[in-house]
Length: 87
Image 1 (cartoon, one colour):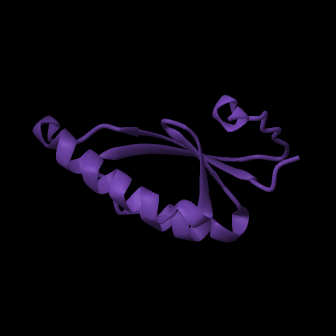
Image 2 (cartoon, rainbow, N blue to C red):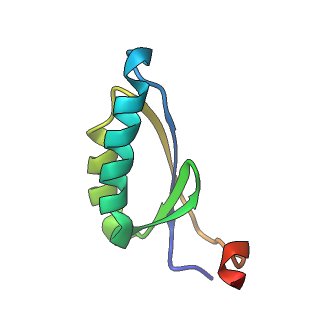
């Protein structure tokens, strides 16, 4: 069983489509700073623990105008080995 119990699913949909690249750069720059608190499950899904929930919520709120976010509380999750970890 995983230590992660909160999953965020997000999609970047900017108010002004011409700013998509600027928003993505800013978003991923700040997301990567949160790496100690999260695990990137897929391109648009991250996992975290309940003790870091408030911190990650605040992160997503700072992008609330340009990102749609769904938060799921997980009671059980199993993470299979990542194929890239076979190396």
